[in-house]
Image (tube, rainbow, N blue to C red):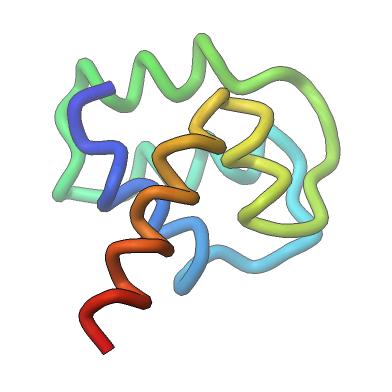
Amino acid sequence: MKNIKNAMDHLKTHQIYPAKKADLVKACNELSDFSAEDKKWFEENLPEGNYGSAEEVIMALGWGKQAKDMDRMASAQM
């Protein structure tokens, strides 16, 4: 996925939890700011499950390091 930062932002600020994989994929597919390639990647790489938070989705997708790096950069800018 090329647009990881925006995907994480969306998961943190616009998604309602708890959410099943199907709910997350549906929401992703309705977004106009993600490419068809990114939408396909998200659907193929998100494991089936029920997610209680953005952090759970981010970890399931293997984006934990990127999330920590983004949080660290945001804290440094404050």
